[in-house]
Length: 398
Image 1 (cartoon, helix red, strand yellow):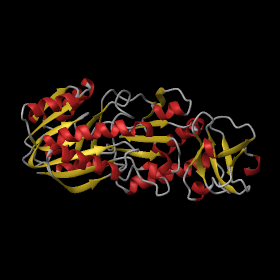
Image 2 (image 1 turned 90 degrees about the vertical axis):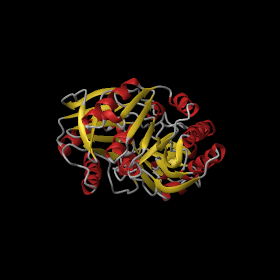
Image 3 (image 1 turned 120 degrees about the horizontal axis):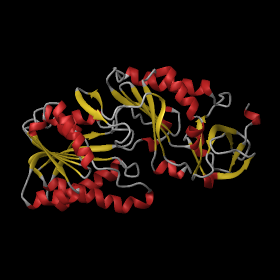
Image 4 (image 1 turned 45 degrees about the horizontal axis):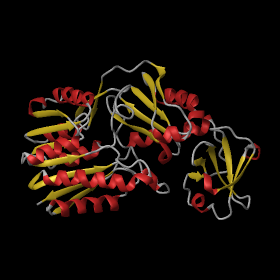
């Protein structure tokens, strides 16, 4: 099989990253393409010497021209290969105890699970897929069929949207792929919290699943505190904190739909009477609270991604500094700030530096109590540091 595949030849000396098993080939590393592969076709990657390096999906529209499926010459890419990778990913989540009937988790995390460009999230009896690369797009019908066999969901829904898909030259797509259409509101139970999921219209695939463990860690500091939850979305941090002993929570988000969903989640978890819900620009509302002299025992900052590309690093870093400056000023002396960044271009060291600068400018001192990252259903592949995107700090503020 391998001899009949198109070949992508690398320039001399550009094979080093693949020898370390990094799964991307950028356009600038390519000497020539032998054959006429279509987008998503499987190709062999070879060094300038002709040495086989890996087998990949071709993406002529993207700066990431090829994404590696396998580094083994004897491994063919087909339905059996995809089944093995899916089975491995599902078994990993089973061992993490994440596959209870009414639970939610990330079932497949793209390159980290050896399936570049594929995201699969599980919400109880429904799966939601994102096909974010040409290779995943090409194999989508097979992947949907395999997921149906392996998981037996009531339905499989697609949310293939976002800038990553655009860079692959793929149009956005949303809708039912298999089985039943998901209900407008689907209840799942995550770490003892009842969450209301809108698969078709919610953020990403319906919810943010990467903060489940971190909500517990933050809530451990909530006893007796008034909580300020900025960029609250549907209120996961507030609800976890109130259930852990917080006395009240103020939830701020710019999305009226998200806040309405947060209100319903608060009711289902029995904490609504201790919540204040605010629809507003978060930066503006935090400034208003600061000018009013408000302070809180626990402040949570979980903003959306501020940095989408390397070109945005400077402006995005300023955004993180501004929001942390406001957050620090709103923490009562001796209280706690939990602050996060989900921008992959902002690594943990830079994020800590930004927060430290904000502390100096705010006139506050802070101690790091805990560093936080993404959970085990969002694994970080050792050869693919780009898979590490979520970082957080829990700080004692004086």
